Image (cartoon, rainbow, N blue to C red):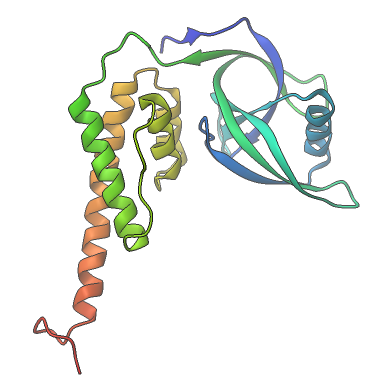
Length: 215
């Protein structure tokens, strides 16, 4: 995977979680472990972001997304915190460090390949499918207003789809907007098929089996 770096490597705190954070995504967190209370205190004191990396029992991914603390919802007497974070920039870990109680890393940021041409038809298909999914999920309440920057739009969709963490991690690591949109298109088609089947079953359950509602 070739990564387009945006700036020189820097050191940041790292927070391994069994979740994938995307740029622009809001993520509420309950901070209770002493080492992560230390980490959040450091970030608040230094106005610093921290990095979230997908972690499971076997692996710790080396590509993640920085999180900015946007709100402190509640501070408990024992030091626990309820916070809301917002995804900022994707990064690749060059080196893991353990100088403090929490993990840190030397990272470099990267972005999608800006020279790539994204087919308009593909973007329109995904936008229409996403709007249809929202319509089915909310019974017609809510819609996508306007059009987003394709990269940002792809992260919005990726963050809201019910995908397994490894699938979301693949989408996070991609540097091709077109490839990410294509994978989202496939995922949306599958999800729409499931939602349409569910809607059909619900309609059938509301009839007497002959296409007419019971009186």
